[in-house]
Length: 402
Image 1 (cartoon, rainbow, N blue to C red):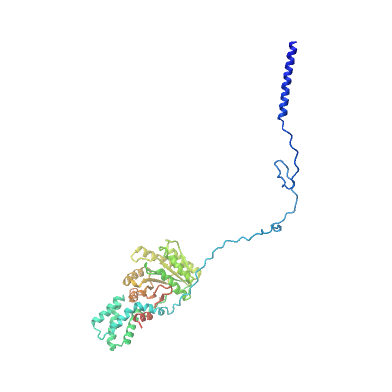
Image 2 (cartoon, helix red, strand yellow; image 1 turned 90 degrees about the vertical axis):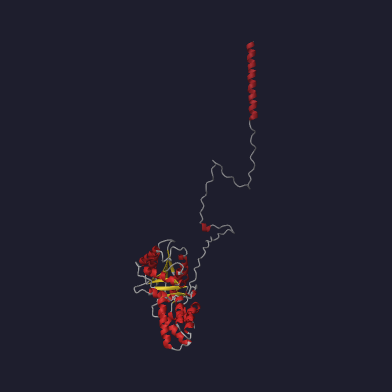
């Protein structure tokens, strides 16, 4: 009996536990989802999700880009290329004709040289020409840097002719002095700047001189002289030691349309000179002007290098002209320079610069006597066309005045 009661109790407990589990499971089950809402026809179609199949693309004819019409107001605009500023070359200048240039500059020359001519005329016009007067005439000539030997020759001839002349009117004295000074300057010397070689072109001219004489400027002005005479010119900037020399020379060349050959700063001057002659030949230029570095005549190494430049250039062709630029204001010191340069490079002509700035015009006579070569060009100012071919008659006329 007890066994039956125990079995019933266990059955009741088991049924109670099963009922509790059933009720808890029903409570935890989520409510059913709400019914789907009506589709919104104004919303954009949803993008396909991962795993969903996209619609199979339809075959449509493709259009070229030319056939596609862009929306109004969105027409393509032309792409503007960046503007490159144009480099304006300086206008080519027409140099002043060289014929008679010294005559046109006579007034400038006479302002500085009149002291010599007027001093001599005043002394010669004295009533009695005693020994003291002749010594004053000698001193006047020596002060003007004419030189000792030329001065003695001139005074000797003047004394003889005045004695023969007897009466001495101002006109006669002026004519007498003009003749003797002209003879001293040397009217028969060939003062042509040789730029026309016998066998082909170009003529080769080398410009040499010490620092401060205006050598590079003179080279640029000489280019203008040649262009004014109808020649085509190539400039060789062989002064590689002075930073601004090549730029300065190129500026001179650009003014008259002359081509400039230059090298690196501090480079080999002989190499630049060689290239200038080579390019001058290739271009068919009439003249090649080579500007060398300013040399101190006391520096043996630099003078030897100048000789090297000359030898290298002559591998192309012989030099037609070697022009030595001297500062007329240096007086007798210029003769020392001239002597050393002549030994190194065989000078063929003299260019006297700053002649308008000195009363010592006698340097023309002295340097010609010293070297035995003529003064071919003179500088009478800082203007681009103030370099003039030397004309003895115009020079003497400027000395003695009107």
